[in-house]
Amino acid sequence: MYDSVIFDHDGVLTTLVDLSVLQDAVWETFDELGVSDPDPDHVERMVIHVQPDDVHTVAGAYDLDPETLFRTRDEIASSLQREALVDGRKVPYDDFDAIQHIDAPMGIVSSNQQATIDYVLEHLDAKHLFGTAYGREPAIRSLHRKKPATYYLEQAMADLSVDSPLFVGDSDSDMAAAAAAGVDSAFIRRPHRKDHTPSPDPTHEISGLNDLLSLDGVPVADDFATVGDDHTTAADGGASE
Image 1 (cartoon, rainbow, N blue to C red):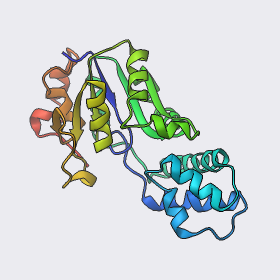
Image 2: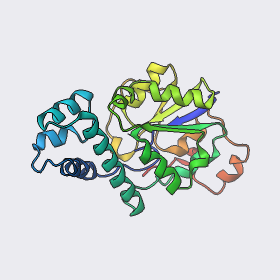
Image 3: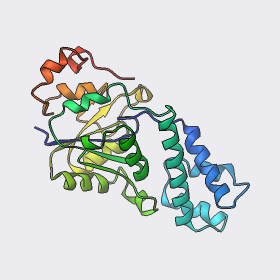
Image 4: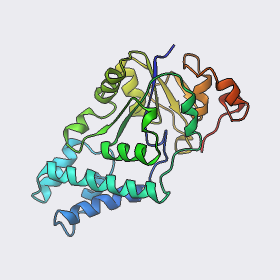
């Protein structure tokens, strides 16, 4: 029996923002720091899958402080994602409410900014559902700590006082973090992962959050059988966007 369920956030609980939002954030970052005509290649290096070397290389090209560049980039990216949430371009998946039937502590471990995760939970009035929720701090050190590293996952487990969680994610880095931490994983096959083959192999594969409620080992509230009469469940075929 799993003693908890921990979720990745983007692409699992809420939809992804369009890549253009994150690209705009980097262009705005350069403008904020007084760089009027950055190399488009440098912009792309700061959009997604950013590594510490990327930050130092790009900062050096414009005589910028690397920490200032990265902090500004994270703050603006978070601000634009919060705007996307407010105006409906980033929304919870239709099956989000399924997690309310899980009878175990829950947490979030995301590679998005902490400010973004905090705002999402406040906006959705969902903070009470999670015993802990981790995003990245706006510092270069967070790039060493994010998944597939186990740092934030282990922090969440410690906060929840658990040692046998199921970690639910939509990316290889999620599966790798779970494997490195020695915990089971569930790969959620959202539409943007329709043809993806996860690596390393997950313990489970699900099509949506409803499927969690029928997985062996996931504690489900006693009243779920009654609720299930009126709601789509995993046994009914699940649901995903």
